[in-house]
Amino acid sequence: MSATDRKVNVLLDILISLRSFLKGMWVTATNLVAREKVTLQYPYEKPQVSPRYRGLFYLPFNEKEQRLNCTGCTLCEQACPTKVISMTKLGAGKHGGVSEFNMDLGRCMFCNLCIEACPFDAIYMGSAYELASYDRDASVFRIEDLAQGGKRSVEINIKTISEALAEEEKAKAAKAKAAAEAKSAADAKAASAAEERQAAEKPAASEPAPSASPESPA
Amino acid sequence: MSMQRLHPRSASQAREILIGVVIAALILAALSATPLLPWHLLDPIRAYFYERPLLNNLAKAVLLVSFMAVQCLFLIWMERKFAGWLQARLGPMHVGWKGVLQTFADAIKLLLKEDIIPALADKPMFRLAPYLVFVPAMLTLMVLPFSPNLVGFDYHLGALFALSISTTGALGILAAGWGANNKYSVLGGMRAVAQLLSYEIPMILIVLCVVTLKNTMSLTQIVERQAGLWNIVAHPLLMIPGALIFFSCALAEVYRAPFDLPEAESELVSGFHTEYSGMRFAIFYIAEFANNVFTAGFAAILFFGGWHGPVLPPIAWFTLKTLLLIFLMMWVRWTLPRLRIDQMMSFCWKLLVPASLILFCLTALSVVW
Image (cartoon, rainbow over all chains, first blue to last red; front, side, top):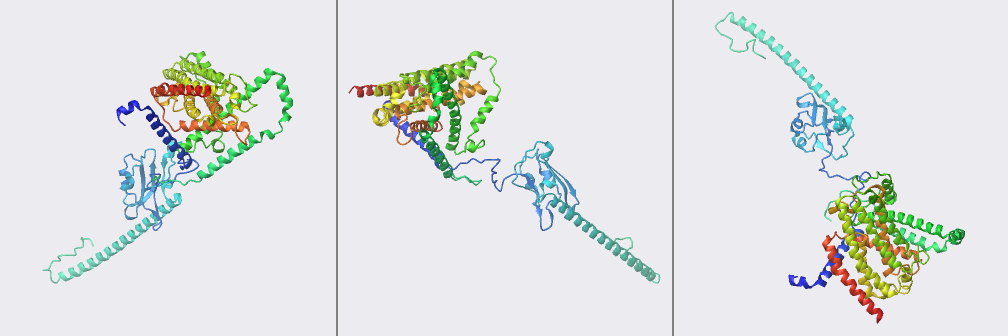
């Protein structure tokens, strides 16, 4: 439509605007009748969140080993920019774990860095999202709130780890004992050998003993 | 729709529409049954009131105002529901069945709210303004014939009375805008008056067309003379454009979108009722909806044969027509964007006024022929 046309053709303008008016009315009418409602009656209906949703953290429970995956390595604690995580280690090394694991979600910004830092698949974000509380202390989530399976799995976790640690300790002690025994046996052996050597040296004192001195460790 | 649906839907659309249709049918059936009710039992009460004209009129007024107030609450709910549905929402759902008592809850809340009057407001004017809007809105309903027997006051100049009284509401709106001592309110009030005075002209001309055709100004007579054919069917060439012009003007007269410039939220906060709170605000709201009912009913009387229609009783037909026109107003409101003030004025003065003048001339010619 050129400018000269527009100047004169008022009727055409009216028709065009009438057409666009009817078009708009048609859109709303089809909306009214045919379109599905998108409203979610929230407190009564809950949304299904996506699997990648960043909700409340959880510490997965390892059914095979009957413990939480967390080894208490503090990598997540170090990765956290807002110091959300604090933990109490339970033992160290191969069987190490945690007895306490606190997350202050009042500070958390759900940035996912702790989860990326964890090499043991020990912490994830779940789908729980109603985390508001009337009390600031209630925003601190303890291990029993976070662990998959709650308090029971925490108890099992602590039991398993303590047993494993005790086993380890026992094994270590046994090993140490065995080593000590071996050492004393070796010592005795060495002593007897030295005696023998001395006894041998007496008749032939020219040959010195190059090794197996009694001071060297077993 | 490509959007992933994250939650399952339980209630189906078709079922809701079906429920709505069933309820509407039940209401219509109830209205149809009204002539069968034992009305003669009320005869002693009627006689008592007929002997006392003052009491009779007072009772009529009280009935009319309370009926309108309740109807407005219902209409507000309907509008909110309708707006929700147009936008793929649910609308009010919480209070009562499908939120039907929501506006009652709102009304109670407004009644209990603190009544705030701005410190620098013109207090008498501020207090008076809501009633200056409310009273004309109710007075216009007085001459509206709901059925052959149900007329507040069968005035032989009904059309003129209704038009002149409905215009008086602008005074109250201007008073509200001025009294609040708020620049947005004043602008809103000014706009309201400018708009009303402009759109009154084509509206009156169209009403004049109908009056010329029917040769009477009494609304009851206008309806009665459409007994065989509705105006819009009897004179389609004159009355279809007439009805369109009247409807546009009616939208502007009751300040509804796309002509809701006096309360344009994006420009004027809330226009002339920015400073109002509590029950005074509620009165503005009720007046607005009473105006809607009046305009829709007026249009039904002028073009769609008022209470005339087959099978159903007169009151049911009139209610049905009025509600359908209100529905159309809501539909337009939730479809079209708001006009600019200059667009609105040029639409009136450059299009509606000449068109209605031409239409009036044609009507006069057709009558004389």
